[in-house]
Length: 183
Image (cartoon, rainbow, N blue to C red; front, side, top):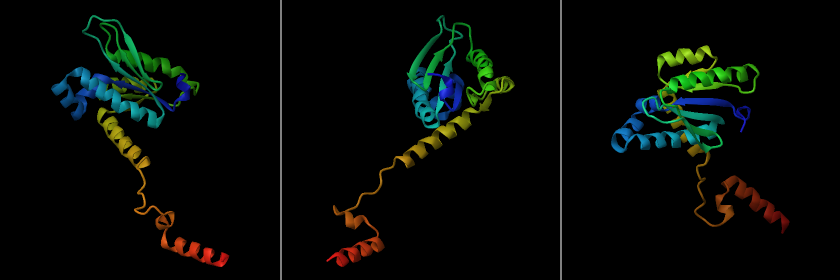
C-alpha cells in the first residue's frame, strides 16, 4: 500500500520505547523481551489504525548475527528488524532521508519519529520529520484507547421492551396526542 494513502508515516524506535514505558519495562523484566515487543506492537496497531498512520516499528539487531527482516502485521503496521551491525537509529535516519522527497512532493503529509534519544531527535528534524518522545507516544496511545472506548461504548438500553419507554416524556406526550387525534 502506498504511503500517500496515509495521513502520516510513524517510525518507532522499538527498544527505546520499551525502555521508556513503565508497563513495557515491567513486561520485559517479568516475561521477556519478545513479550514486551509484541505488547508494543499490539498497542500501536490500534493507535495507528485510529489515526490513519503508516507505522513501522524498528528493532535493531546490532549485536545479533542476523539479516534484516520485516514482518507485515496489518496494512498499516509493520515490524522491521535491522541487519547485523545496524542500529535502529541509522535505519530510521535513512528512512527519514528517503521520505524527505515524498514530503517535498506532498505525497505524504508528515513523518513522525517516536524516540526519546536526543541525538536522534535532532537528526530526524533535520530531515523534516517531526519528533515525538516515548512518553508523549505513551500518553497518545492511552488517550486513543479512551477515545475508542467512548466512540464504541454501547448505549444504555431501555429497561423495558417497549420503544415508547425509551423516548423522553415530552416526545411520548406528543406521540400520545397525535395518536388520539387520529381516532
